[in-house]
Image (tube, rainbow, N blue to C red; front, side):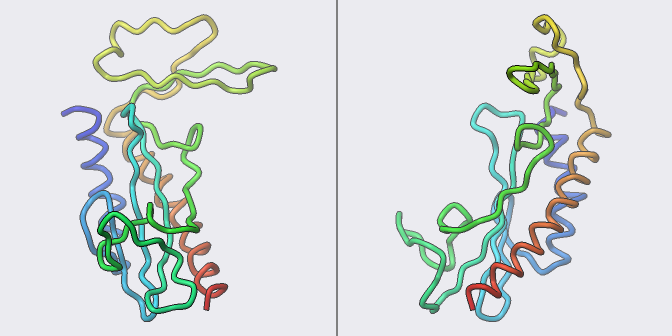
Length: 170
């Protein structure tokens, strides 16, 4: 299995199953939960370069004077995703704001702080890191579970933000 497939399988088992237990419906990468006058939204966003993702949470208020969304591109309230909302909460990720599912190398610098290099699996065997970079995350199934545990922990904080946000809007 590729790293992407390992990560998706782990997300299905350890994260998405918990979202379903909380009443969310939909398919990866977009989930929604209708709760009274609001619709809670969660979206997984994959890095365009691959190897990492982030998660965003928001809510819409259909019929409200403050709906928190912009309809465009043929979208309706029933097909909205987090990307169409005005205010949202993004999980912090584990490194540089992202959850990575490739091998990760880092080095610290007084001037630049911590720098990260994410190495695609097809390049991992032949990759020679630049001076000062050390591998600190070798991605495998066990690391995928750790990533999922971090996502779940940060989702708990996001749900607190979501409830506070909904109260402020009502």
